Structure formats: structure tokens, C-alpha cells
Image (cartoon, rainbow, N blue to C red; front, side, top):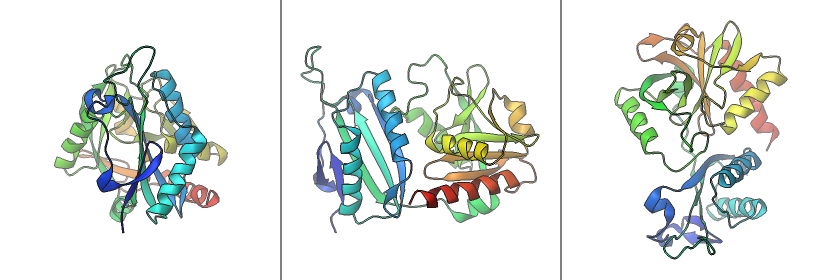
Length: 285
């Protein structure tokens, strides 16, 4: 069976899909992306993903040649064409062909949507917890790309590769002012004194879609949850550490390098938030 991608305004066989060698995404890493997950053919929080994409595009002066309704229709069409129910999707938006662009005639953005069968994280990670490392690199609050999900991801991938070489699943970043920020591909929560804590957006962090869902679920279910500036001592003193993103969903962390988190097993806050998150997915099908 042929595999399709959605390129600009139509379905294209993956083997035939092409973008210009003059595309700003290829030449300058100018672009945004969203990673999404579908359950039973329904993309979870699709509207929120598109809201973030459009807000970042406006902030970074990137045009989007399609409406939200058109992108939603394209996502549905792509899942059906690839006969997928439970899938990993990526929506990529780039500057487009910049070769002949002028101030009066800006480039038309390139839109790519891919969908592949979902390959979940190993069940053992949810049962026994993930190990993470501390990234040697820092996030800069003055970076104009901070807080946006851009395709300029090379530094994150280097840090993630270093984590994997140490048999860890993620690397946690701190800011240049030594505030806990996020993982390479995830947001981070701590549990201290029976309160769920996560770094505020100004740290800077990307406001992850799953992060926001977890915060809302916590508040709706009498779990005290706060955005708060956090430092290394907070991380090491936490009774639980939890990561979130659209693919891993809600992930327990039981080791920060050689340091044991809590009882070195998934704790009650993780168990409750994971349960609530699964229920939220079911409600949206």
C-alpha cells in the first residue's frame, strides 16, 4: 500500500514528495512544527496544536497559506489515505521558496503533514520510570525563538543523543539563570510537599499541549498545581518528577542520572495524572 503525505494542498505519494532546494526551512531552518497523536482516527487536542502554530507564525512573521479548517480537513484526509487510526503525526510549516521573494511578494509557505503508525514508548518505562540526565547546554530567555516550536532542533537532538548514550531517555535543560526549564522534547513537572510544580513560560519554556492539559486536569481534580521558578535543589528534592509530551503522554522519572527520585518508582501523583489523562483521551473520541 502506498504511503501518502500532505504537501501544500494535496495528497502525494511519499516517494514522490518534493520541496524546493530554495526553501527557507532547508536553507535557514526557518519554520515551525507540531507533533500530534491520533487515537481511533481522532487527533487529540488538534485545535490547541493549530492555535499554537498560528500564534507562533504570527509572532515570527511566517505566513500560513491554509486556514485552520483546511488543515483539519487535510489531517483527516491523510489518516484515511494511510488507513491509520492510532498514529503519530507531524505538521511542518516552512518559509517556502525564498529564491524570488521580495518585500512586495513574500514567499508562499510550505506545508507538510506526515502520519505514520504509532510506535509507543516501551511499557517498562511507565512501569519502572525513566532515567534523565542534566543537559550541559542552557536555554536563553533572550532568544527570539524561545517559547516557539521551531524546526531549529539540532541542539536539542545533540543533547538527546548524549542522554541516550548514557542509557537515559531525556535530558533536562536549565536556563542561563540556572532555572529548571524543560526536556529536549518534553515539559517537566515536580512534586514537592504534595504540590505539582512546573516552570513558568517566561523561564523560557515551550507551553506544551500535553503540559496544559495536565495542568487543567490537575486543577479540575483538586490537585494543587502551580507555575513556579525552580532550581536544581528543587529537582533533587522532589518526591516525583514527571515528563509530558503528545507522544509519551505522561511519563514518570525515577532517576536523575545517579540520583534516585523519591522511592525510585512511579508515585501517586503520576498514577493519578496518568489515569486522568487516559480518561480525557476517551472523552474526546
